[in-house]
Image (cartoon, rainbow, N blue to C red; front, side, top):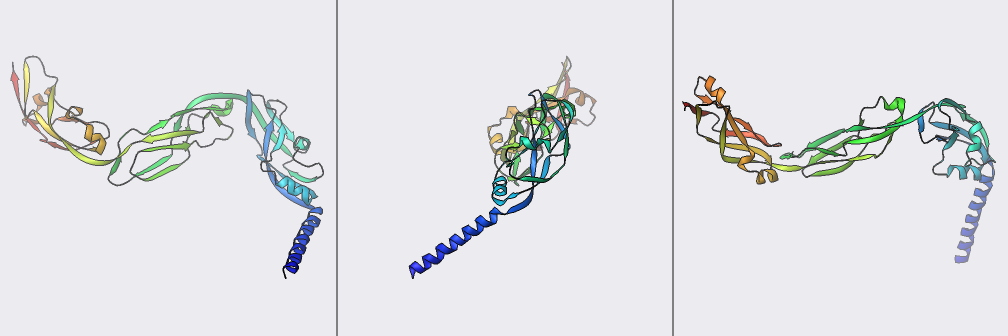
Amino acid sequence: MKPKFLKIFLSTIFSIILWIFVSFSYEYTTTFRVPINFTNIKESNTILSQSSNEINLTIKGQGWVLAQISSVAESYFQISTNEKVGIQHADVREALSENSWLNPSVQVVMLSPAVVDYAIERLNSKVVPILTDIKIDIEEGYGIVSDIILNPDSVKIFGPVTLMNTIHDVSTKPLQLTNIDEDISTEIVLKPLEYIKYEKEITRIEFSVQKLVDKTFENVPVKVENVPNLRTLELFPPHINITLRGGLVNLGVMRTDSIKATVDFNDAFLDSLGKINPKILIPNFTTLTNVNPKTLKYIIKQN
């Protein structure tokens, strides 16, 4: 039983191989697209524009040869610029000889476009700022408690002079961060620009996120400003309690002297109610939620 099965199996495999061999021996016609790659460009020059980015090729040949051509992972249709500058015109059929990946046994039935127009210009470089395209969604009860840092925040770009004169900044690819409840440090890819190269194609965004809490700072002294000579402004009370909302860690290390409370003598001098409101200066990334008392009584004395 086993020898019979093996005989049938081997016969089937042989038939398949024979069929493939015979089939690939026939001639076929196929069409595919190949991206254009310009060669022989001076280091000081670059491509400014081109009428087409790819060549449509229809070729005829044996199946084996066509399969070999199709298997080439990264084929480019090479067009030599011969180190010329300015507006140029390339005859695509004449450029066939520069593309060694095209087996000489195949017949080029059709190619499109027949002519590729392109322009070569002097290469220039400059440094431009990076703009972010980021949407940040913070988890409820949390908040951003630091500056959003982009590192680097600028990049050196290279491109043709005419195009470079129109570019004043570059942008990152869109990035969406959702339900964030911890510090963020992540790379962002710069959005590609045609005919422009980046010295570095990525940047990094960093910021701190903490749970938001309230903290009351008691007995914050109120400083009197702009007091003229021979005058004194006495406040009642001279200290106030201030409640801030901010990051748990940040508020934990914050002291009373991190907050500034002031009143202006001139405000008291022009006041007719006998009470003035202190001005509060709080640290970055905190929110003022309460001041107690909100108004202060005062007495102006002459020395």
